[in-house]
Image (tube, rainbow, N blue to C red; front, top):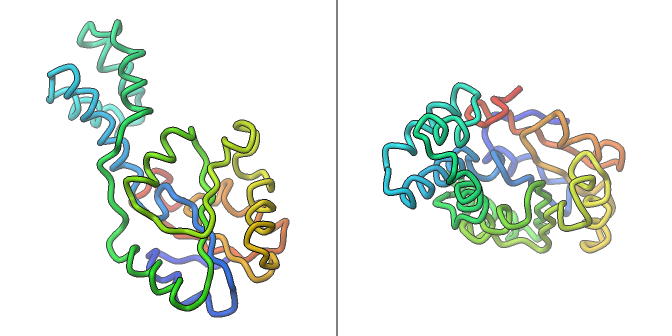
Length: 205
């Protein structure tokens, strides 16, 4: 596994592969933007814009932001609506700077691009739509039959290989979470690139 600090460094490490498969959250865009976006939409619906900042403060210290803030404001009756708003939001998010052009250059090299991402389908698909990512194949693992197919399951990687028709040895997976992202690729003989994202939710650890 190769470690890098900046996602844009991927481009110089893919000469000997034919397909570059990316994780999504905190790899191609900052997941904290999605979290902030969700809090803002909850606050807008309540007509209480200041609540978004309070939720963010709770989130940053590791608390249950929605529950804690709604409880403190005597708004727990709104909890289910708040969760629905968060999960089904059309998020205000953007790719990391330079990523769109990097993906275009990778495609111009003749290499295929894929996405394998964990999470609720409605949320992950909304993220992908907002980011306007072009890829040969995109897999949201929960759509394969449930949460048991999230990484480190090999199912999504095997399906990606079958669709792209490229040997595992000529594929690389790019992710930010060493706790789960690279277990399946290692088992299957894929290469891996760890984006040690100090600004991500996993803090580059």
